[in-house]
Each structure stands twice: as structure tokens, then as C-alpha cells.
Amino acid sequence: MFRQVATTIVGVGRSVVASQSAGRTLAVAQTKCYSAAAEETDEQFDARWEAYFNKPDIDDWELRHGLNTLHGHDLVPEPKIVVAALKACRRLDDSAMAVRILESIKDKAGHHKNIYPYILQEVRPTLDELGLNTPEELGLDKPADP
View 1 (cartoon, rainbow, N blue to C red):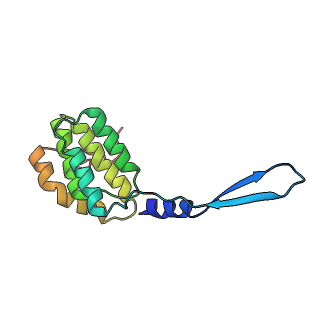
View 2 (view 1 turned 90 degrees about the vertical axis):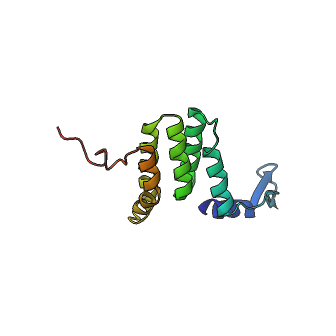
View 3 (view 1 turned 90 degrees about the horizontal axis):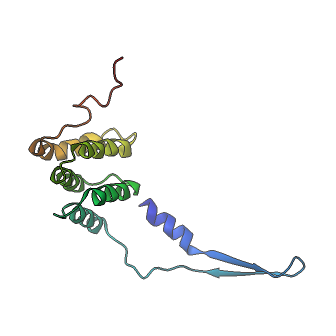
């Protein structure tokens, strides 16, 4: 929800400064920026992304674009969004991207050690159903031996 706070702070007061010359007084006008769009709830956000990845005709570019946009948000996606993205990877026969999704979730979880195991626990049935491995099962979490 960092996005909401940043938008509010930026939108509260923007100052427009106009100056005629060095010897004249400075005119300052304050404007407020309001959006006509309604706030999106967490449930609506989750449903929008789940529907995006569940599109039957999604292609490689759309998958990558959606994942990049989703990764840009200040959040770790809910397991149902991850499941939809993993199924999209399977429909496109892109198992490498599925592993990258799990790596990005681990990266987004950061120092919160309980988030990534929770996501893995929730998506484990889907991983087994699709025949996908986690980065840890593939040995990608450790440096390669020389």
C-alpha cells in the first residue's frame, strides 16, 4: 500500500511557481490533484491479476509483461495469483519462467523468512500437478561447485 501513501503525499499539494523577473515578487499557486477513479481493494486487485493470468489466449509477451508489472508493486502476490501465473507458464510450456516466478517471490519476501515457505506450502499442490520444481529442488539456491 506504499503506492497509495506516495500518491496521496504527491497529490496533496503541488506548487506552481511563476516569476517574471529577478526584481519582481514571486507568485505561488497551490493546486490539488484528485483522481476520479475509485480505490481498488485488495480483493479486486487479486481478482484482476488472477483473471489476467487465467486468460486462455495469453502469450509469452503478455505473461512477461504481467509478471514485470506485478513485480513492480510493493507486495508479494497472493498464492492464488501465483497459481494462475504458474498455470499460464504451463500452458505456454515455459517451465523456466515458472522457476523465475518462484525466485522473484523469494526475492520480494526479502528478510521476512516466513512468507516464501507459506507461498510454497500454498502452491505445492499446483507445482505437483504441473510437474514443476522449486529453485531449491533444482539446486539453484546454492552456488555451483567448481
